[in-house]
Length: 180
Image (cartoon, rainbow, N blue to C red; front, side, top):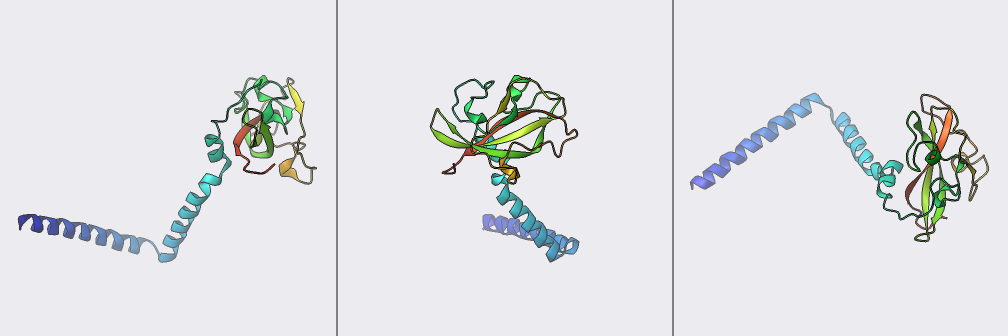
């Protein structure tokens, strides 16, 4: 009997807490603003896995071989520019003193290790003068300039402090999944 009374009082306390919180929320917000915020949160949560950043993090388990300072390296098949791996950075990251452009072009390259196609995001690193080493002009599967998202012939240093081009990185986004 005492246990039943204890459980009932605990549930009554939880019920009062929930009811008071709900009434406080109802006084502070309207239904429309609540639904707007809820919809925005759900949409954002649904879109997050589609972002290139999220996909790039999961693609680092790709097995690779070759010299990342060579234009013939598999992930540079559509890269037009200077390799950041020759200019103080890596194939994935910009050299110190430069910043990656949030705008990029995407290519599809075949990895010779597993013989699969991968989506590669080519991001220009901006903010320093042009690095004069390891210049490449690979155009595999490149489209004409009227497809700006698929060409390396455009300066991609938009959205950065400086529009000065320095070099380009090639980040693996993930497996192409039949595209190619």
